Length: 79
Image 1 (tube, rainbow, N blue to C red):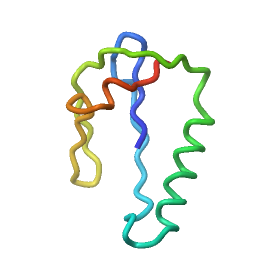
Image 2 (image 1 turned 90 degrees about the horizontal axis):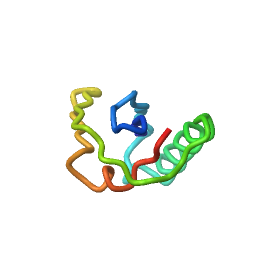
Image 3 (image 1 turned 90 degrees about the vertical axis):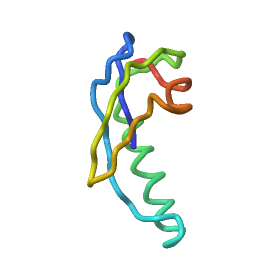
Image 4 (image 1 turned 60 degrees about the horizontal axis):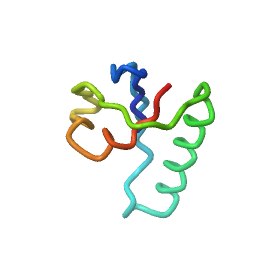
């Protein structure tokens, strides 16, 4: 999962893909790492900095993600 935010903290989109569960096999972890690596490589130039993200809610496959409630908010990358 990769959440994208602009420099003002507005959610601009999310990339989500289920590649398996860690307990299934090491291949699930390797697949997830490859997908994330590909997504990050496709990003325009980024500046790593702390930003205050605005509350968001992302629904995917009957699961709700709210990254504003955890460490994601402290380690986000500006686009």
